[in-house]
Length: 288
Image (tube, rainbow, N blue to C red):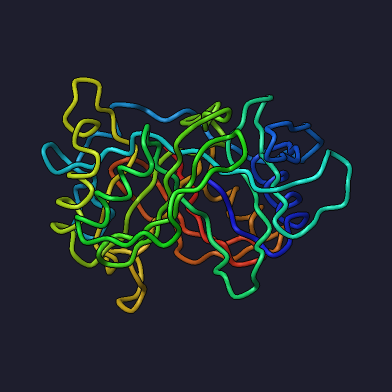
């Protein structure tokens, strides 16, 4: 997964202090160098059993049950063009984020100021071109066709029938997450949609094997938009990062120039709050 930002250096300072990430610039040849970041609050590892429970209240994000639950078979950040560590950043520069030396995300400078400032979710696939065709056949849209990213892999950008945008990653030299479901790392991705049944059908078809296979272990769910956001909010994915104490993390977000978009609320998989960084990229903090 990656954040599309106007100011990557500001993102380095914000996320470095909030999650304790360090950073390294990454080029399309796959070389990267880790540099100093910051330290901050991060959370306890998630309880795996909690991830499979249904919400007990109607107004909380809904976890998906078999056969409805959705499986995200994998996610990976797509490094863009970058210079060597220490060189001035150019438009399109990517900073790969690390926790204890393992990749956990990426920050990418927007090449066009009209592009949204967002966190993008990537779905792992062994064949991006074949999956892109299935997305079209299922009523979705391929916004950016599969294309190589140096020797790192193949990327594509797509949208589901309701317009929620996500990305595809076919790994080459870069496999994706080195750590997740740990303090300061990815914990959950929630799709907020207007038609949950249509979402079940679309994503269930795309990722059928991962959903119904013997090793299925979802870290991806869906909920009606109106359960958490105003009714006019468009369908979208929301990335969740684990923290030890959501209230303390909210204080850090505010101190660093971010905003609280949705105050803490209870879900079956933990206590969550929706925030945005100083540039407007929204994400959730999750306390198990």
